[in-house]
Length: 299
Image (cartoon, rainbow, N blue to C red; front, top):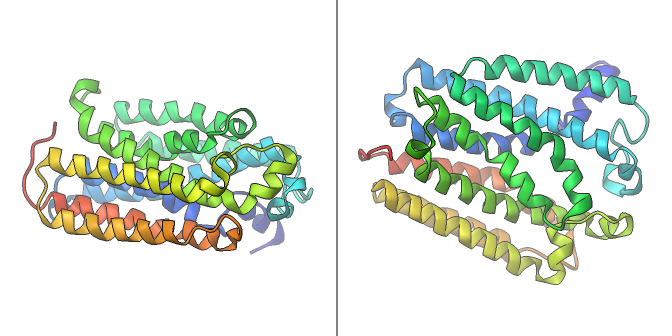
């Protein structure tokens, strides 16, 4: 692609699709949970799935631009981020802000395809997107704020299937799924943060990887363990088909494999472990599809 367009593609991390996969999976989880069983999907469900795909790519890109605007000076001090377009001066701040405005406009067009309830939930996420990059400056738990942001697609999908947004009718099943997603994010983003722990310490950036240090493996194991407990509670609440528990076991084995290979002293493998969460998200989706092989009542 032309050099200038390539810079904008780098700015929104199109060369690193794992980010939008991690944003997309909770949206699709919520869709699978709220919609009819996948075998009975109509054009509406397929349309929503495509909207979530496009929205995840665009909004993850917007989030990356916001992050790089806030961190353009810090990124110069971290080896892994020194080549980002804003950090190395290839793009100006003004160019980045205009590009951000365009991405947000595209995101708005996608959001307007849903009902009013989903629109309200989606619009409320902009605050989280805007403040998340600041969290690593003021709290040791920026991964928690990322979890709150990245998994909110569960609520957008749930709201899209309600004629009116009555929270008591939505709360239990989506809440369990949302909470499981938050602990999933705490786990995988702690792994991700291991890559930059030494550089982050030099520039004063906080993270759960730095907070737990050599205990990071135990922390990730705890986060993933809570995720699995919440998913098991969701399956029990739904009266899920037994096959869903088989998929749950496969997911548990995958997460155990991740945890087993965390190495605080030599974190170079952290990137591979982090990226494997694309497959973890798939296992959760398959688990939910299997759960609805037998009818259950929407809470």
